[in-house]
Image 1 (cartoon, rainbow, N blue to C red):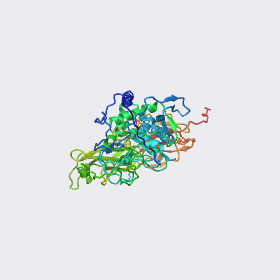
Image 2: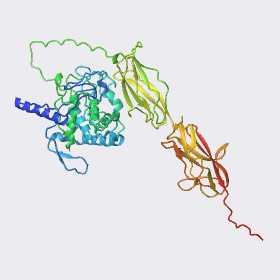
Image 3: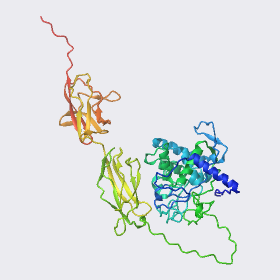
Image 4: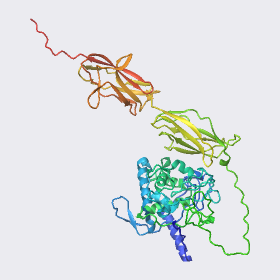
Length: 570
């Protein structure tokens, strides 16, 4: 039996006035001075967005729960060794056990992968409360997957944003339009690139609270945002759902949960009732709409679905006919037929460097006409640590008046080899366009000693000076360049010598080839100490680097002085 989303009824004018004052006081005290400046749009009401660019948010600006926390903050109690305050009193401070565990695990994971983000688990809890009432009060199985799918309303432009199908119904069961999915309410096009496997089961399931919480944390930590900074915190929340009212609601729950929470059994969490689309004629709905069915106009964010219609009283007159609806005119995105390369040059960079060329893609109609104001998503695919500027693997760009979207600059990582950048149209099922890119190893074209001191040694002794080199590439210091040092037999014979100077390995054994060397951040490479056996003569040390730089260093070993006494005069 699905959890029931009850609707609160406030009786009496006096009670209504008190409630209004309370809500105003809470909003003022917990979210002061909040304005929607990050996205350049004001939306102070609770109406869902019809923004055609809503598909660039996490939720598609879908409806959300508007309930505010109680005015009395939970009372913190001493910790029990977990480092997290517990609380007593208000039922609203209780968070279902599995859901709470998912939030904390996501915080820990992001603390390691993106420590500069400073993501608090209470922010995930606040968003989870507003999006789905903590997965409908914690109605999840032992693995964290919701008992029934959580689906938002159909985003068909009828009171909501209009987002045509992007996943073939794989996540939301709808092959015509998209719907927000799961306890954190991701739309399919966002989940496609932001989805995570938070419980290590090999799947990325938006209906699993561990996967969804980790994905939400990753989404909020984009663009180098530091969530301990108020401005970045607001930007991150607004990127999740672009509404000032949504921002204020999430911030209110964030502050409330920071005061203290306590764990409650799964399935027993309190359920919200007020929704941002109440004024659209929608009503609460206790059960979700199964994937693949066509939902009625009654929806719940995170609840989706409908109940059976209530019996209607008999009537002697037929109901008035509904005038036919006028189809919405096609958007610019609807007219895109295919993608074309817009003159992108060969994409090659050395490890650690920025790519000199940027990817440019043009959106075109079937007749080959350029289409402006279309969102193109660029996604880095393959085993690579290359990222776009800002450290992200995904970037969304709007086409200009010539129909061209230019991706941010690529920054090569340390992994060498080939990878792909795929361009796709957001909100339109057309074939993507792949761009091949290559990262080559760091290299040097010059190599020189940092000192001109002669390297000499007595047979059986050790060289006083260590060999230090500097590698350069196009005149600049070449950092991180791989090198090999070998004591060779002759100038024209690169075979490792079997006599003369040598290095020692970790066990003190003789070695005459050192592989796996690498220059430091300043392009410097200092070789280990050299030793000499009992062979006198002139020997050669050759150093080679990736990129072809070579240097041969001369080493001289003199004979040891004789230990026999000099003959005396007769």
